[in-house]
Image (cartoon, rainbow, N blue to C red; front, top):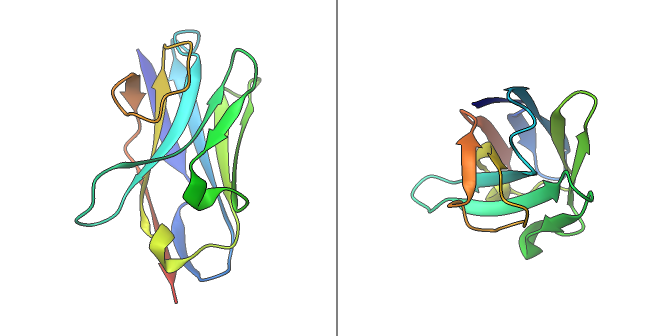
Length: 124
């Protein structure tokens, strides 16, 4: 089992920045991909970004490209999501997820482990 704990959410104004962290514990060798998803009220869960522990490759969904950056610190088993230029439409609960798959997926299905989520609220 892998446990994931997110932190770093909060209430900010449009244009501000936040950095989310996702700390993994437990069987930390049991995943290859770490991703971030978000879910706004009344909307479906949406893929945001993911990073491969195998080769460090990353993928960001179009709506956050140029504003959000996913990274990792393998020594701390922690992934980060640096969010700059936040917009009100970025308001959501952000979830960290880990996958044993070798390939980055935008679907939530391959992700085996999920955190409890952290709220990000962006006011206009």
